[in-house]
Length: 490
Image (cartoon, rainbow, N blue to C red):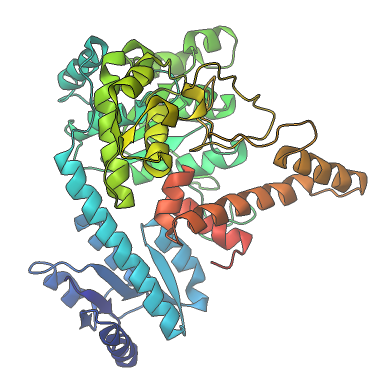
């Protein structure tokens, strides 16, 4: 078993953590300074690194940057005094797993290190599994065209526009383009421009300086800085606010930008890959998308076919997703009977590959026997199924696919009579608040909604923040920031 490494110039801190971790049966190795710890990396690799933020001869933040450059997946816990909270926030932006305020509660510290250890083991397992599984599956001619295009672009830095319906796998293609490019060793940073509120998107892209706006307690690197030397994937680019399109065009033109509230120009060497499910030419005609930005992004266009155009790939994809779900759940993989496979192959999949993946995960949990028959498939694959209107409550085997015409539904839909469901409850709450003259209704209800989403995801993942963030479709830093902002006791 790999060791837990502790770096702190305070002997008492090292001693206390060494004894506590030893009692838990965890091997530990201690260092009094960052220099010795970095030298030790030449011969060994830790499972988790716990480092103080202020030490003679090198700060924890400097150590974090150097360690992440060599071991990007290593969980790093930063220890800090309360007065160093701003630095701790900066640590999150540098990729820290979590911060541990001093003086700390010892059982809580051990629990945090345990979670980091579990995350390290899970990441190692995922990397091993990824090495054994093809990054993309597809024998259909349309997918072979995509694979050939990726091959032809493998030595290029050119900007690529990926078009395709929601759930068709545009980010997978972007990751493949990055991995097989000269920038493959650099970072791959993805951002969904449609999923971030308009007033936060500029800061997400370009970063901000401390004090640039209310709540900006520390300077923050944006996605362009994070992707320096690598690839920035801009998903759903067609939804980017018009005023931000001008700033993006300027960065693409000369590679120069300013943080929000900043006065010094910054440069970032980034390859941009954009994706959209929309018709950008039509958006240009409507005046919703800048024509010059469209031409700047549309250097090479790569169309990703919907699943209904590559039905011959459904059997292989289904087997792959069933195997992956079984591995995640620690169970034997379910098998599809010939009749069930025929039903799946003939289905139109409005949610594309993502919907098939959701169905396979649902089957791994809910199918009553090892061999899945047509009657075991979820409702939307049954004859005569009528989709539940999107304005009413429903139960689904997995989160609804954005843009899907027929969302994935569970075998037993919730009561959908008028006036019932969480949307009606929220509407009633909003009406009461507005009638009472409250002026912060938007913020209050948004915070309640975000808090419930995060708490539900953390409950499903047993408190594992990174896994919860992945399931919610947000970044690790975002979920940590939200937990702090919302004051959640997790």
